[in-house]
Amino acid sequence: MSVESRRAARSLAIIAAALLAFWPTWKYIVSATWTGGDVGYYPLFILLVVLAAIGMARQPRHTLPISDRQANAIAGTLGIAVAALIKLLVVPRYAEQYALLQIDLLAALVFVLSATVLLFGLRQVGTYWPLWLVLIIGGPLAYRLLVSLLGGDARAAGTASILVCSSAIALGLGHRARDRVAIYGLAVVLGSASLAVLLELAPGLGLVQFQRLPVVVGGLATWLIVRIRRRGAIARAPSPSAPSGGESSWRSVTTLGLAAGLVAVIPLPASVQEAVGRGPDRAARITQTVPAGWGEESRVEYTWVRRYFGPEATLGRQLLRAAPGNAEIASLGLGAPSSGTIAALLDAEMSGKEAPTPRVAVDTFSLPNRVQLDIYPVSTLYDLGGTRRSNPVMVDLGHGVAGMLYTVIDEQQYLTQTRLVFSWQRGESVQRVVLTTQDNREAGARVPEPQPSMASNLTVLLEIFFRGNDALTDSEPALKDARLITTFARQLVAAQFQGH
Image (cartoon, rainbow, N blue to C red; front, top):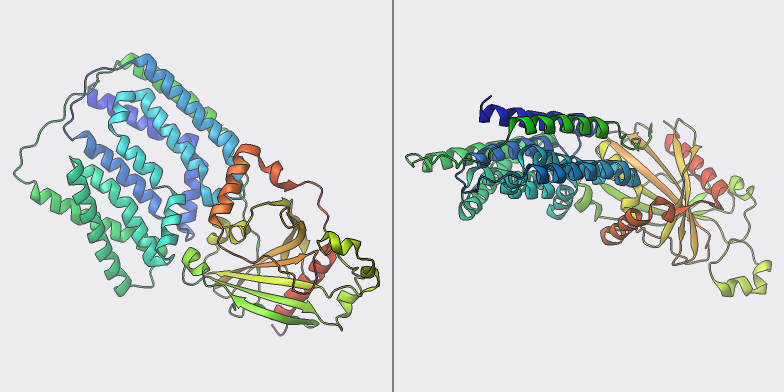
């Protein structure tokens, strides 16, 4: 078998092993792409990286024909073990944030890198270090951060896709660092021009078209320009690379196949998909209709969500207080809750005072795409620093709607919040409704508001990594306002269906 045939066979072995070991991961990406998710750029990005690797392999290099098979085997095997440990231990810790973080893609990247070391050698892999760096930077999490920084709309998604994919185009076509910078700039300019034309002529296309078409057009135009400029240049054959023994390579292929089978049996965490009920057919509003027996104290709209979730996303808060004539709430016999201060606990006059009127905060988060609810869980809307959460309990709210009830303990303010979350489809939008009460019902008491809390939530994710989920879980929750918030939720749901 010729050298080129052996290289092709080993490359196919790496691809087959990666598909086998992480088949659920690739299935999820394809499914998310077809259902309107924001990872539609990723298959094209991977294809461009593969083409860039072929282009880099054809570029002239000056490397010594040295290959330490024992070192390659040790490094490759250890790397595959690390990939397996990431899939086995790290990914389950972030089950709720699975769709957002996609840590299994990192494990897949480590697996492919290690398999390449095993079959081709450390020196060969080191030659392509820019491509490995691009693969790490171009992952879904970094892409989503870039989209948020650029504005969160279709133009931002297309621009981010161009910026990420152009790096692979530049590496595949450029021979020197200066050439790669120039080619990257050219690909970005041509791709951005294509995106502008596409937005002008066909603004109603799906997200995946805005992610892919400008990259394809810009990439082909860049390749054509580079090819024309290099026409007539004397092509230099690539330098011979380190030789490899066929017997050793086939033993390594067998090892890789066994390792892929072992990694494949490691399950991914159960998909945490938010249950979405069928809401009223009326078009969604920023806030909900106030049910009878409740009065609206305040209403506010948060415009920052458009920057993170797109121009069609909305988030509104209503602060509702029970009216004196609300017999259903009065029948609950709610006592005076804790005020959250030592002075209030020592105040002897508290026993003679009437219990404060219950208040409930209603946060309505509307999105045009169902998939985004799974990508961005409830925790992305609130500051999680210094809090512990109980395991959720499912509650029936009537009209085919179910909610998840749990508590959030704020260890900094010494407060307990009771939260009930449900989601439904309303017209063309999907809504997540978050109901919150807290044990401090004093007049003027502030209920924590939704806010962009990327820095503090990153700290929480690091704490989960080092300490596990149990460190941030309330194992013995006291659902103080369970009856109140469940009764209110049923009244709220019924009010939205009234007259439907």
